Image (cartoon, rainbow, N blue to C red; front, side, top):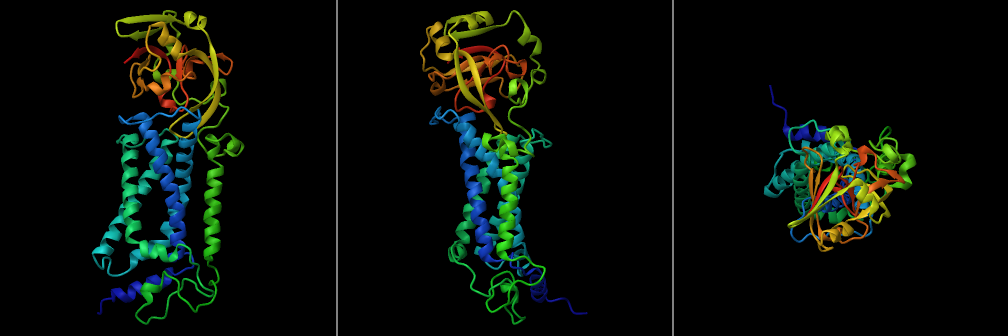
Length: 406
């Protein structure tokens, strides 16, 4: 019995998958959209990582006050948009995996390796990133560190793939198929497998029951746009009315502001409500404690600042409290000092938080005692919390215990 010819089998399968929704030009267009999404995610992700794990050269911008609200909102929004774009791109190219032989040369092997690495890391990154927005972690590895290093793997494999495919990308970056071109196979004359997923001149319009390239791109754009509009309202107020599927909604939660971690979850309820609570401020050998009544007796300042979380949601709110600058002056410390804040939480990754001098010398950085015109709710950090402009929510320490000048 004769064994099937791999080349003819490949041609037959490629002919079966031939479609206007699979062509070099279409793949380049989808790749362009996906590349923009991943680039925005990569850059905004680096900014967020730098704020939380600052290198020695890091600069911390505090203006505009909503800078982190914007960058992290873009990070999560474009990450969600990348999901349908990646699936559409995989649809447009997967018949290429059926070509024979699987590796034709060193360059081809390098291309295959870069694609495999890019696809695997992208699928893992987008899946875990989406699940993270719901604060669900069904995996044994640390999310934040894994998310950070996967972004470098994705970016590196993407650059390698672009370098290898640059001739094809350049040829189809602006070009459009000539009249009558569509993605159908040639006759079996030795070139069918190579042409089956590309544009072939001299053919009729789209076959019945198959989408045209334009209709497919329109469908992808519509799906991506719908997904963005119905989730980005957790980050951008002007889209809040259309927020149907995001895990957080604006104007919800205690005092009209969502919370990620409650006092019960942090195990601070009894300590936070204790009449013996006082904020300890230390500067070298000098220290002073401030009871809640003493903090309220100091000059109070109000500012509209957003609480913006790494999961993508944010909310602008009015905060009132004591300027950090005034507390520093009370213990004779310089206004531009690096600080360390400690929470009443008995444990947790953000129990202790350092603050750079750019924040401490900003007159909008507060030890907040009130939110939206009333005393802080316990879940928002009562009796006192930090709020600073341009800062990730996880670093806006709640349930303050001490403030130390480093």
